[in-house]
Image (cartoon, rainbow, N blue to C red; front, side):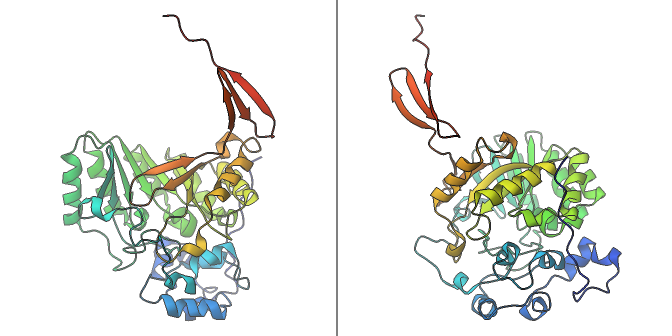
Amino acid sequence: MPIAPNPNPDRSRSPWRDVPDDEFWSWGWQVKHRIDDPETLGQVLELTDEERRGFDETRGLFRFGVTPYYALLADARNPACPIRQQLVPRPQEAVVRIGERADPLGEEPREVVPNLVHRYPDRVLLLSTDRCPVYCRFCTRRRIVGRVERQSSRALLAEAFEYVRAHPEIKEVIVSGGDGLMLGDNQLEHVLGTLRSIEHVEIIRLATRMPVTCPMRVTDRVAALLAAHGPVYVMTHFNHPRECTVWAAEACRRLVDHGVVVYNQSVLLRGINDDVEIIRDLNRRLVSMRVTPYYLHQCDLAEGIEHFRTPLATGLAIIDGLRGHSSGLMVPQLCVDVPGGLGKVTLVPEWIVGRTGRYTTFRTYSGETAEYLDPLPSEH
């Protein structure tokens, strides 16, 4: 049997306990009533002195905002809660360490027209909005996300579309932001419809954390809209098993039932999911939700997030621990986005332990070794 999802958050003791169900469980209500100050959050979580200091010291550096739904997933009394660490500012964010960059992925030099980044030869990144339902504290685009809270105007998007139309080498467009599903239905339909009208665009990806942080955004209309402009691949972002709720599973089911493929891109975060058993549990739950684990990202070198980063060896050890002990369907690629915008590199543990002539010696998942014999050179 597939793994049952976790229960939805309990709001019976929250400030919203008297809000009618049809309002509270709607994405419009969730975004409109997003928590944006420590006073309101303090009615949901018992904030520590350090967390309150985090609000003071990060004010003006990076916006705070969280949907009531996602806030209620956090443990009210435990500051080490993996959900809580992702949403509450910490004083460490105000400290910029050696090697950290405002633009760690080198997107600004490759912004060919406003809101369009052309980094790889055959694909572009469309920054459709700077808004998110939740502002994750480890955000790599904190230099721009949440600064103004606006969607890109149709005029700016038109310039981006014209660039794509004029470059037939572009086969793929990644609609991101911010969060791509912060676009309203009509705006989303405009973006997808325009991209689908460009003959050489074969693939559209939509980057969104809505299935995690505001899953009620994934309505039947949204799922049908994505399917109508397919193939559209949804790239979502679950980081911890606690995020795999009934609502989240329903959002993913709705997408998949409409023929939309859903991939997950986790970020490896210190003290949150930097443990092989947590990642194994997460990926088992995702596959039960018909979501494919795609990437396990090493945390980027964005300013103020060193306290989230793990050594590269941690990710390699996790992949090593997954291989052979979990279905291959549940083993993502460990990925590093090389600083400066030079592209992604995938890392794998050292499975080859020796080479002698035609013989290659492998280490297996169980720690045993075995030899593989290459064929003789061809005589032709």
